Length: 275
Picture 1 (cartoon, one colour):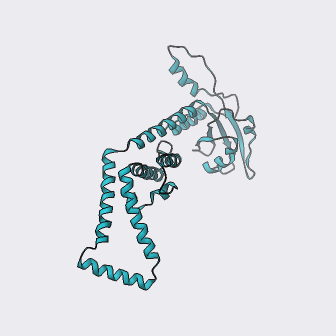
Picture 2 (tube, rainbow, N blue to C red):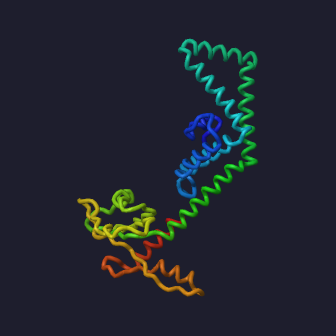
Picture 3 (tube, one colour):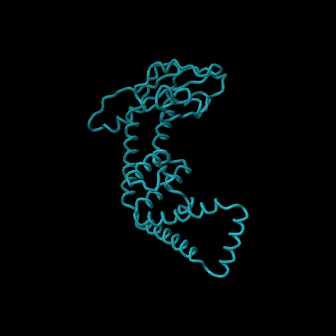
C-alpha cells in the first residue's frame, strides 16, 4: 500500500485543506460506495483503495494527527515551489550545495523537516493503536447500509433465463449486461455453459416485454423467459423449510425449460449474490 505520508490526502478526497470533518466524512462515504469490501468482496484493488481512504479519514479527522500532516504537507509544497522556480543550473548548484552541507553538519531546515516527519509518523502509529471513534461509527453505518441493501435485493428480485441458439456463439457476461441493463438493475449473471444463462434483476416488476428481446442481429437468442416461482402455503411449524422449498420450485410450463438445469442455475445465482 502507498505511504500515506507521501500522498495529498485532501486531493484524494477532492477537498481543500480547510475542509470540515463533515465534508471529509461525506467525501469518504461517496468514495467508499465504490470500493467497500462488503460490496466488492473479491476485488483486491478496490479493497486496498478502501483501506487507504479509511486511513486517510482516520488521520484527517484526528486534530493532532491532522496538524502534524498539515505541517509536513506545507513543508513539502514549499520545497516543490522553490525547486520549480529554479532553472537547471541553479538546481544543480543547490543540489551540490546541499550535498556539501549535509557532509559537514545537519542544517536547521533538515532538523525541522525530520522533526515534522517524525511527528506525523508518531501520530499515524498512535491512530493505528487507538483507532478513531468517528471513523468506526462511519464504517458501522456503511456496513449496516450494505446489509439492508442485501436484504432488499434478496426479497425483491426476478430472474430470466436466456437460451442460446446451438449454431451461434454464446454471449459473454458483458454482452448480456449491455443488452439487458435497459430493462432494470442487474444483480447477478450466471453464464457457465453454451446453452443458456440466468440473469437476476433487483426489481421484481420487470416488464413482460423482456421476453421479446432477440439479442444481436447476427446472434439471435433462441428464447428469453421470465423464471417464475410458485407460491405455497407454509405452516407455523415448518415455515423456514417451506420457504426454502419455494426457492427451488420453478414453473416449467414453458417447453424451453428443463427442471434440473433451471434449479441449478438458480442455486448458483443465489450463491454468487451472497458470497
